[in-house]
Length: 289
Image (cartoon, rainbow, N blue to C red; front, side, top):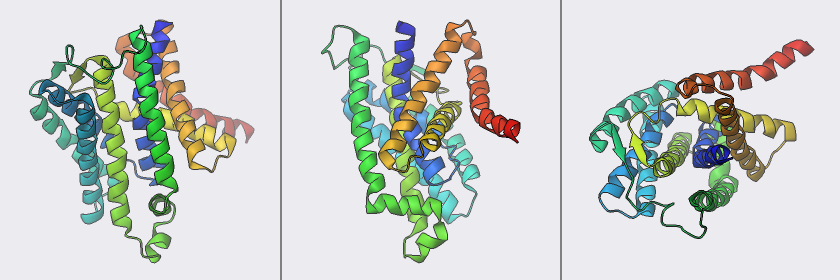
């Protein structure tokens, strides 16, 4: 049972990440690979902040600011230099590896002994319950903020930029600026996930972001399938579907490990699982055809 509780906690740590990926990939239709670097950046800034005596909430905000800066760089390279968004993300992600290594100082830093967001909350006797409570508060707050933001005039302009850029540009909206704002917000959320995961795991590793975009993508696809099944058109329902998607995805991974899959094959298992999630609807369509 504790094994699945840990999986749900990890899924909740990934909550901001999947909302960020949903924003970049589904709202803006931009395949943003900056995610791998900004996720690690969030964890690295958290490690540096806690090691220097910063309060946990301040390190979380600094991590989100770092992620926003990384996303802005990708968007500016894409919009100002006219470089494809995928290549712009790869360039920034590659650069962030060196930035993260310089900031962290070495490849792995333990965070045990520092007061983090979870250790500072002790309402329940079990630490897992305290961790779940903190993450639930964060996700509910994030859900409320993002629901309001995406339904505001600013959010509608961002959504319109992804749906029909020429149309919204004709209305006088600066679509390049919208992309900068959108990718900044998306990567701030991704960095938030990196920070939460580092505090939950108790360490920051320079390679912890490798392949995280695949895990996030699998969750987004599950959420998108639920959105299409429910024919959801409202932002709050879409966000709920995406958050449920990450819980389902992490539970499936935990089930695979529980069935005896070697932990060393976790990345391979993740890739195969995402492939199945993507391929099954298409295979179903082929069978009906």
